[in-house]
Image (cartoon, rainbow, N blue to C red; front, side, top):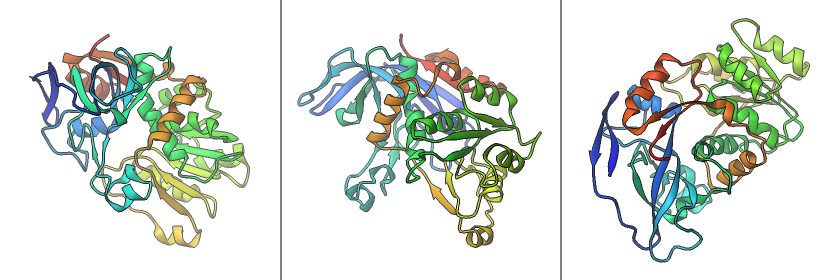
Length: 341
């Protein structure tokens, strides 16, 4: 079988290796789709802070069960599935206190350990989630980024009846904004400097859009939400400008959830944070319950994925997918690698 390998930033080869055989508690799946993530793009440019090379990528996936190992139940050959990409130790403090997603020895497939960009993939059955009948392989590959959004939203005690500001209308920001309605938010505003991405946000029903190059975010917040502005702010870019926007426009006591991955270390005015009792909260990855919530939101139509699906590339054209994304940054939302039909 063929497996993708990024030897160094921007250099991709394919290696031919044997199809794996499952042992007890394992499954072999036939890969269908790989979604290209913003973090994958960081890896392609050598900008991901926690990835070394060579690395096989692929962590947003859909697949079908190909072979079932001993002591595995609940699956049948041909089931459409997705796979949680964390590898955890199960022994550290986070793992033993219900926070395995931030394991002290966390490895993520496609970054610190082998990803799923291969024709077949061997995995522990406990990482596999069966997808509902009628869900497409493209939707299945987008469960992971929706789970990212669900975990980020869950970092706030409640969103019921609250006004939400999302900074960044890329794929994750869009999905955070969409999913917020499934968590009970009252209204959602999304901000981005790309009108194309804001148009996508409008297409999927996000309440308010704002381009900060054309109008002040602070003015828009007062106009749409009143003097109390946003109750919660989600930073979904990972840039100095957006963390500045979040902090400077936060109401006293507001929670700011950091969703974006920062390639460069930002400067934050902690004196301002202290004086206004702002709460800055991190969010990383997800747990199984976030995947289940993501599947629910997709299945019931709360989250609309089709408008975000930009383009497909054959497996052997992996590098062309990155070239396309770099050339079409504003238009690209979710690009897929098709490994099989």
